[in-house]
Image (cartoon, rainbow, N blue to C red; front, side):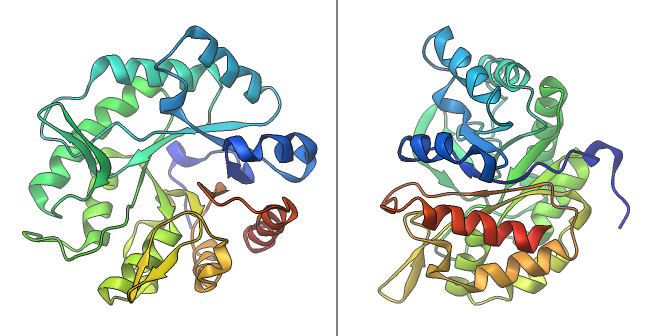
Length: 278
């Protein structure tokens, strides 16, 4: 597969989304963790010392920042102050790329407090692509957009989600962070084929992958991020399928709550992902 020059990026390997309960394990096992993903929003809203802390982390392991509040789907201009802060952080830690979600998190400057799905339409895709191009130019590194979970069919759609993502990233000339757990959960809850979804994407643009665990309640899968990846082992099969077809540069494993007592469980997931990716 040919690689777009914009995405001829370093293969940074398999790492972890940085969480407080992982700090000691990461320090003790840096030789077994390739990189860390930090939540960018935790490092830009307080003092200069927060950016310095991110820089300190980047001197121990490579970092790729991941954001929550870009709200690229909001029908309003980008928050330029926020974008400048993110660009400054991204440059400070020498990140190979920056990622956020293909969704919206605010309306009329009101924070929604969650990642909210868009209607998959040509109009929404054009709006997201224009803002993604603008933000990526500010960043100076590739922007990756991530698929999110949602729990009902979105009304008003004129495109499939895979075609919507494809249109946004192709028109913006940006990349994809493919969350395979989110994909699996949506496919199970909304009854579609996750392999067909992967095949419909511009795979040369898939730069990073997220893996996490979820929970099943009342017949529905939930994106809880508080279980091992093996809570739905089919995600490993999706990773193998994807890595045979896309030039994936990095994989991050997420555990946002309920950390295991034995950090070896997390290291085992890192090593299993690395064996598939290598």
